Image (cartoon, rainbow, N blue to C red):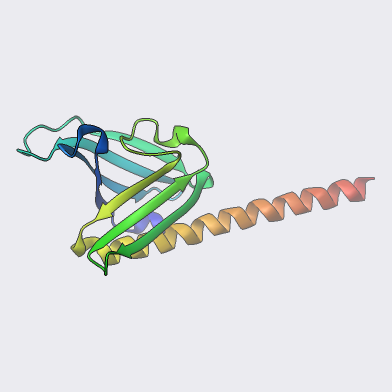
Amino acid sequence: MIHLLDPIPFTIENDSHLGLSEVQGMLFSDGSNLIIEFRLADTVIGVMKTEAKQVSIPLSDVLSLRYAKKYFGLVSEITLRTRSIKSFAELPDAKLGTVVMKVRRPDRSDAEQFCLAVHEQVLRLRSARLEEGISNMLEEDDAR
């Protein structure tokens, strides 16, 4: 039940603004979609923030959602890959259907659990699609 898991706060370093801003957001699921709520905020003073936006990605479009610790466990990241570049059309610094989100230390455990739960749900959806495809093929063969 991934929709019952806590939202995961994250940041994305905004390379296009030379490090003067970052994307701040929350990653969560409604059970059939991954939802990314985000805003752009300046990193210098911390006062200027854009209005919040939301991107919804069907779980069927998710290729992978991975949690990883890097640099001897000092940095934690969630990497989300989708089937289409369009999935992240509004999200700054997403590249070729991939976005890397940094997770703060207090949220690491929740992030890891969230990624595992979403990965499990994505695998279930793929398995169901495969079974449906196989049963359709068998029905077509029986009809001949």
